[in-house]
Amino acid sequence: MAGPVLKKTLVRDESFAGVTYHIEGDIVPVLEVVLAATPVFFEHHILLWKSPSTRIGVKAVKGLLRRAISGMPILLASATGPGTIAFSRDGAGQIVPIHLAPGQAIDVREHQYLAATDQVSYSVTRIKGIMNWVFGGNTLIVDQFRAETAPGIVWLHGFGNVFEVTLGVEESIDLEPGGWLYKDPTVAMKTVTQSLSSGLFGSAASFFWNRFTGPGRVGIQSMYVPTLAVET
Image 1: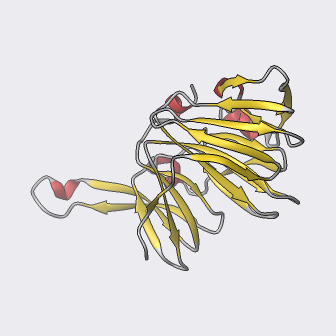
Image 2: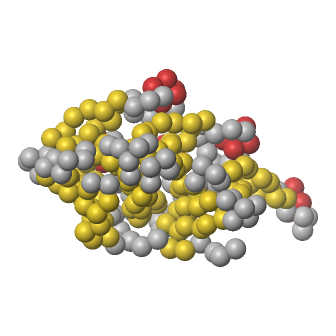
Image 3: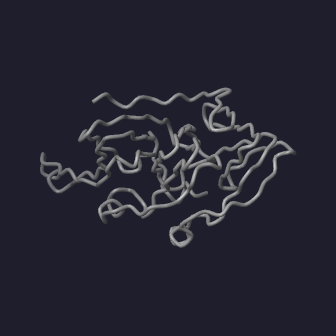
């Protein structure tokens, strides 16, 4: 298995799914989207600037009860062109674009998506297994984005730097809880423990890991930020 590879940090004049976008900034990066006919949706608190001609509206999402229980926004903001709009989360890190073909989906760690094009459906799914959220550094909910009938983009904010590893069938990688950013739905996730068997005091201690098993991609962020801090 090849090891994780660093995602590129600078994107200029990339066009996909009806929009053109730029990603710039080394410490707290900024995503700027040039809007034409395709709207984008986002959480309102990450808006940084926009053209006067860019219109802001409201978009409802699926899974309202689950989102309310998990403390996530029930209504999202939506931007329509012509014009530009820029987003930035209040944290050092890296913005990663995920291009989705029709029918393709991506699972994303809660509270870490930045924006998405309007062709993408946004729902939430529950993490299975009590170990995953009690000891695995996860909440009960994972965001899921799917391009239904047309290509779409989801932009994510990872803390620190973002790496990606592609797992083959039955290939696995163990990540520190808090280290995963996104994964293909085909990748299974569970929490495993590893006991320290050496030394007088080590035998009573254990490590907890999130184990991901392929096939599929896993995105890794190098900096851990607690969920409550990500919400702000």
